[in-house]
Image (cartoon, rainbow, N blue to C red; front, side, top):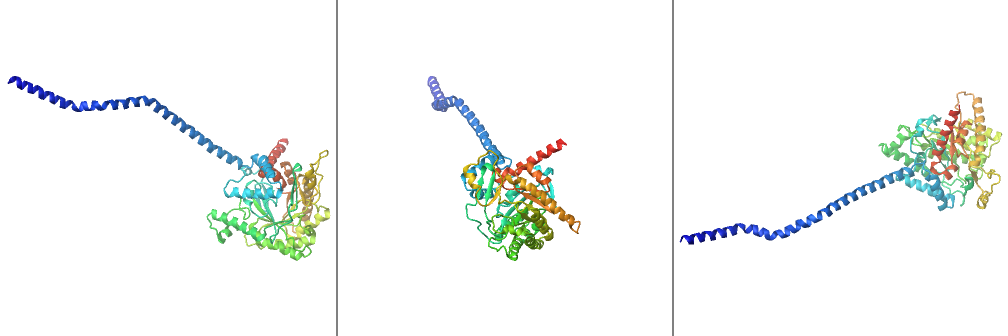
Length: 492
């Protein structure tokens, strides 16, 4: 009995032990898979670590690659939009000339490109603030200008890109010429390059969209400026800007700079009807003067038949008197100055004296000396043979412009300065203001600009040099002027 109980006890203990150990045995049956997974993970650990390392390296590479792209784009943007960049002269100009064999097509294309770039804020502009030093500053018409350089009319005939031109460095931008009514100008082709001489011949014939269209464009520019100042976009906001209460000249909208608008008569207005001619100019003033700092009366284009006949003293005085009166009647607190643009071909003492007398009697504020010439300068250096295609261009009708006009412009500035000052001395009103002279014709270097200023001009204006030198021309000339002034000071 005792033996049986002991056996039972051992059996129960065995079953209890077996039951107690059952979960462990069950786990033991699963462990081979778990162990295999652990062993597999252990074998993969170095590969995972290597992959993480490669991923980190890739992220670093992508970061530096992306940063390089961003920095490259930023540098490219700053370089391409800087007027000092050589790309404008040595790449853009040759490409335009190659793509557009017709010079007028290249002109219009350049205007469209600059207009589009300006709308996106990626247009070329003069970077840095060299003008703020005041070493080239001048005073004209009671305004302190940042420098004595300007861009002549012709590059922006219809007031499409004055803001762009003002940003590439000049203190004066002249748009136009604008006629009262739209006119096509002369038949095409009408602009011809002479690349070896950096010269042009043009016979545009004052092609214009008309005073109304140009005035609308300039008015929109003023209203957009007022809107960005938070003044609104209506007539009242426009009035605030035009009256000078925004702290900028009403034409240029840029401190230290002025906008000139050149006006002319329509081709079909009879030259011998001086009253009709005067009405043409006055009509332009009434539409455009509100948006200009300077009104320029063009009586010197060689491509409008009979226009230069208006430079004779009596008809010129009649026209200018009407223009001055209209300018003084402009609904604006400050009135635009009035200048007359004269031909380089009417350069005899009597002709210059007659123009100067008309200027004084009409109350005009100044003269722009020079325009394209009907004459053909001795453009070819001795021993140089002009390419055949260029030789034939010299026979084209139209006004010649280029560096060959410089000597004539310099002589004419000297003559006008002397003649106008003699007129000043003879005035009964001894406190009469000295007449201002702007000059254009052959200006291509800083040295030439300084010579013209020393001869009595206040502003030297550029046209053809920009056609061949690109949008960086003004910046380059100013830099040359500063270097010349430093050499002069050092030599003293």
